Amino acid sequence: MNDCRRMRKTELDKIISEVDSELNKECIPIGARPLRALIKMAARLRRPLAFHNQDQVSQYILAWFEKKYAGRLKVVGPLGEIAILIRNDPYKMIIPLVYGCGGSIIAVPNSRDQLPPINLEPIKINVFDNIKDFTQAYAAELTIFERKELILFLKWGIDAFQAIERIQSEVYVPEARGDIQIAVDSLFKTPLQCGLSKWASHQATEKLIKAFIKKSGGKVRQIHNLRMLAESAEKLGLGTLNSDNLDVVQCDPGVRYGEGTSSVQDAVEAHHASLELCATIARMFV
Image 1: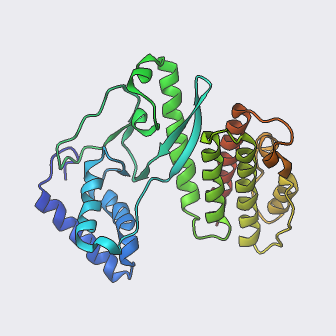
Image 2 (image 1 turned 90 degrees about the vertical axis):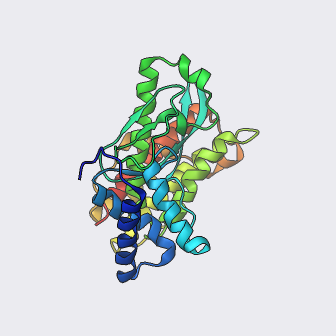
């Protein structure tokens, strides 16, 4: 099959139907089939599929399942969000759900090209389409270096969230993902809650370490010292975690109540260090 040629909808419908039948035989619940279908379809079509409004192939697949099963489906959304600083101001970056390899990420202002359906050419995800409330006029002002930095952030975010997604069913992990979201959302409250954001980043990291300890049969101690928890996890097979990141994330519970000082920059740094630690731990799960 030529990946770059267009495919008639009838051809694509046939393949999706075959995949749905396979999932049925594998006893995959209806609500979980769209995501599983994206994984299988990415392999069948030999191109990445992203839960992204610019990827018309994935949108067509999801619409197919919506038409067939309607209310029995789970809501399919992005992998998560990260907070980034653009010229010292915080913005939310949406991390799209992507299956398969290939494709590319670009940073081009005013680029909202619509691919004619159904085109099998791998999509280009425009980073500016994934930053909330970031105008095209502002995007046009950014330097080449700044645009490349945003592309690297998006790639890093996809990789990190994919790693955590793979252990979603492990104990403490769903709660840790909730903490990651709180760390982001707290930076966009009025007034800003930088201390709460830092504590949420700490809690996400703490839960992932404890998840590894629990998974490995160890005893989970009710402490908040990340270094001590990391040492316990390392004795059970966890690789050595980045000590600088642990120091950046470590904070006292009182930070939630304004004890000490915490800036947006401090909170974003802790958020990034925490997400990196969480992804590193997730990759070490057996």
